[in-house]
Length: 269
Image (cartoon, rainbow, N blue to C red):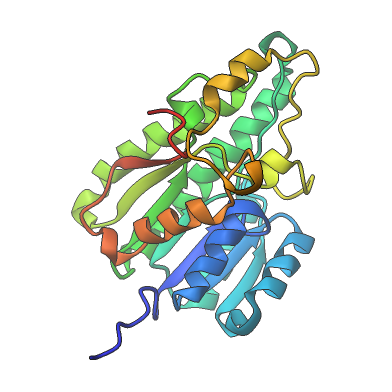
């Protein structure tokens, strides 16, 4: 029986936020599937960690420093990624930050920062990538929304607003570029261990949630998963989302566009 070729063989992929968490897990998953990947992140240390974990696949991995909230950085970063890859087939917008607080204690600066990185960043990277994606093979964009975009998550109003914007924008782009056969979809992670939930890497564009000391735990109980995890863990590993992202960004999902896939262990059934 003939062997099945790797799903991402000869496929060119740019992943933002790839220095930690789900972005890093996605980069490693797509490398495992034969893809050529440029990992983008604002953290040089994070990118070095991704390279170290790539192991035998390192020859198909390049990195680029990129602050998705800065237009100049995005222009240079995307151009460098496309040049390194010789084109672009899949874009994964995984970069994001999370800061939590009581709504009345949320500063304008914090609100603007979250929206700039999450929503503006997704806009900027996608806009710069469109010319290359137009020339790509079975082009696909996977954006990161969140269960907070659709369901109530306390103390995360700014984050929820940014993710709701990403989700709405994804739908609009899916229709606008449908005749050019560029697919746009979202993942909606929930109850996932990542740089954001673990509070690692202050410059990884994935900042810990910093939940209020006087938070009402009965509200948090409404957003916990129903599927059991090993060792009683609260959050699933990032690879749970990476597997779904890899599917959506591949030609296997050729008939999927303009939607979101919830990856939350049944939290919001």
